[in-house]
Length: 84
Image (spheres, rainbow, N blue to C red):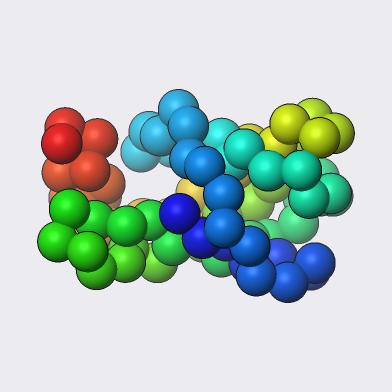
């Protein structure tokens, strides 16, 4: 996965993906409340762009994101990714 925030664009590992959010494993520093842009790779190789807010941060481990309102298409695609 890729993500972009105030510190720039980064590659990271995605964990605990759900319709409500996810955890991003990264050593980059984050601020609670920061808005981040996420891109999750689909099985097809295309990217699913999402947007969310940082709701938790663990230094040198990563951060938790709560997704902003998902469209029906985003929700459908997330369900496909989670089941795959």
